[in-house]
Image 1: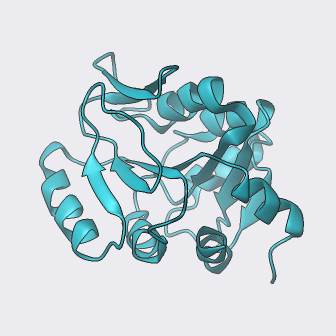
Image 2: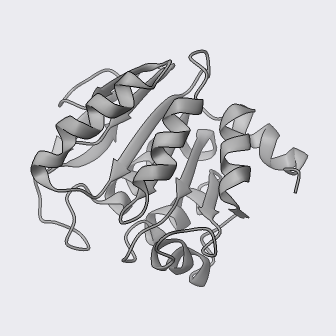
Length: 195
C-alpha cells in the first residue's frame, strides 16, 4: 500500500529521526541502516535495548553495511545531519537545546538503560514537530509514552504494524494509548526511510 502524501511531507520536514526497539528489532534496524541515503539531511538516532558488551558487534556490522556516517553517542557530541547515532548501553540519551547529546546515568526505565521513553520525551521537548519517531518490535512497553509525547508535540509518530513485528508488545502498547499517528508495515517503513 502506497504511503499517504501527508506522512511523506511531514517526514521531509523533520530534522531528526528516532528509531526505538528491543527484542526482534535488530533485523529491521539493520535493513534501515543499509537503506539510508547519505544525503538524508536528518540525524538518525537508534535506541535499542541490548546487553552491555553487545554494542561493538552491532556498530561493526552496521558500519560495514552503511553508506552514511555512523557512531556510538558520547556525552556532549554535537548532533549533525547525515549521520546515524547509536545510543550507548548503561546511559539514557538526552538532547540539549544547543544541539548536543547528553548522557544520563539515572535509574533504568522499563528495566532498560538506554530507555526509549527517556530519549523520545527529550527529543519531543527540543524538536517538536521537526521530530519523527518509529517504534518497532519489542517485548515491553518502553517507548509508548515517549511516542505519545512526540505526537502531542506535533511530531511524526509511527509504529511498526504489530502483525509485522517479531515481538508485538512494544508497538501494540503505543497503539493502545493512541500514541501512533501512523501504523506502517515493515515495507512501508523502509519506503519512508528512502523517500
